[in-house]
Image (cartoon, rainbow, N blue to C red; front, side, top):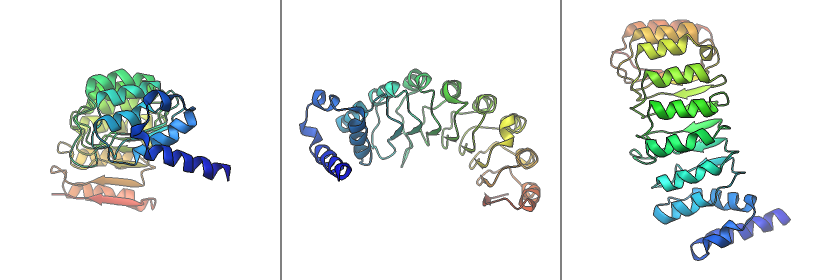
Length: 258
């Protein structure tokens, strides 16, 4: 009864939140601010509304999902520096790409987030090798899920940072990244290759059959592998996949060859 009443009160506050002064909202205890933040995060927010949602995060915030926001500013992201307990960060672009947050603000904030387990950065165009370097240096040992889909500025250098620092990563999406056979070889030769269960490398236009052979030989736990729209792949990749399919552990396998 108490829980449902508290939830209802929070919903009422959220419905009238634009009429309330920021100082009043910031006086709430962390668990109330986090609930308000979560409610606002389900909306398609822009401008001052998305900034208000960002201002509600606290040191105790464990999950930030701004994928529904139509606009995320650097000022919004700056507030994440206070989230010392943050475990899940989702800045995915639902349509098109995000030009913001900028590389500069990501390099400023990510070193403060040492407890991240899941990071979603799909089509965030300012994510670069330097950003991946900062991310993995801060939280690489804890990361379990990393989505860099559409981050075309990420190259083999990003794969090197991931391979060297991530020790429990199970799911990795590099679709649309500017990686080559060299980067995949670095990944395949690292201890991480023995842990990966999901890898997506769709639209990686520079990888060849050598990358697929590397992955088949070096990643025994892979149960999800996708590599569509990679124009340099041939029937040799399909033949290499037969080894993986014979393991009987595959849950999802999508590919196109040319």
